[in-house]
Length: 316
Length: 219
Image (tube, rainbow over all chains, first blue to last red; front, side, top):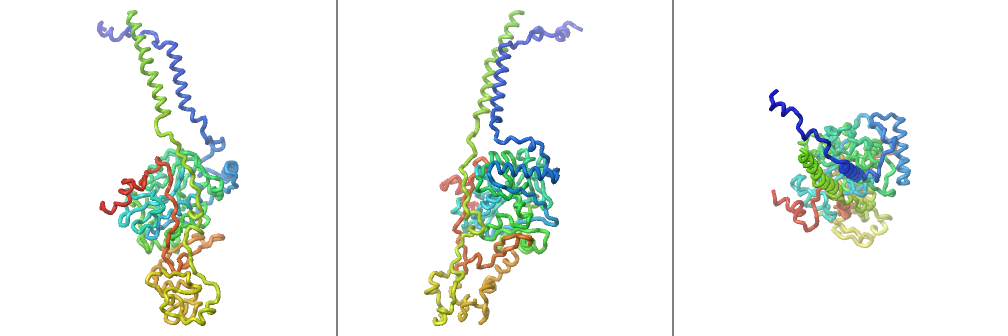
């Protein structure tokens, strides 16, 4: 080994020195760091919704047994009772065999009065503050379907104008839903009757599904959902309109707690123009089936490849 | 050697004091106070029944769809005038706004007040008034039969409890003024700004006008 190499190999004088941060600076730095950590974590102290132990270990909806569900529903009902003073009934109707739901909306009739929006809010216990609505009514000039230049916050006096048409857009209940593909925890999935649902207790709030949806059909609860006890709908479905938590995703479920019992969704029953039609796609005698067979129907953003079960038509 | 050691120690201490500590403090402050800390909470708008109740949402007033009483008390003495447009006396409130169809006896049977006018001299009872409508509005009636037109309630599945209700013509339309008035509409969403883009900032905003009014000119 030459002298030159030896020199490089041997540790230099500087490296052999003792640690250069003195006791005083070490203590000051530690104190600063702990204060910063405490300050940045302090919002957790007034976190409003801390899950209980049972909630924390609750399994995914698909893994729940009948007994588990009974227990969970009783717990949720007790929570609703405690919070709102309302005796709610949480049900979990299962998909009916040989039923696939579809929706047809007649744009030639829709006047953009937004009654469906508020009927949906009334039925599905959406947060009133901050406001959550599943349906957006897009106002567009006659002669073009241009979503970019549509307006969804037109004032109510601009409804039922002859120069425009109005396109209510909610969850399209796709056959190839992009939202469920991106969910990292499988908290959202497609049921047997074609309804895409969310397990609000399993959702981690990453909002991937909101970004993946080409229709902006999903809503995220940034803040704690607030609804008054008078406006709370006590007829609740576990996968649909039970009260949601802060930090979870929610979406239109075709009012599955109603439709799986054979009723119509709230938006359809309220429509003053009869633009909306709902039914079983697999029943050849159903209204939706007849319309799809006889009218020229189209789906929104066909190029997205989502194969929606929500059809639009320009019938008289 | 001693000098060198002292210098290094001094430099590192200075570095910590001068840059790291203030930097950390600034970072914490940025984390705490940067950005829009305004809460999302808006004043909740209480829902009005006319926005969501199926019974009230239609908001159409049906004038004189049903006249109680016996028509022949008056009409037995009155000679019918086929050209009458504005009915008198008991029917003075009826305003006929049915397009070109502006004669009473186009629809009402001229000799039988309890019936509607069918083909020729035939009569259509009020209970099946849809047959009268079909004489002119055949295509719409066909649409109604197939489901494209008209309001349905009750349920899609005939099951216990849920019976489908198919509204007939005169349950929604006032036969004397069938065009809907659409007087009640529900207000625009009040979502937080950051949740969704705003297309309309105010009525005078040129951007709103660009988005909603001038689309036709741009094509």
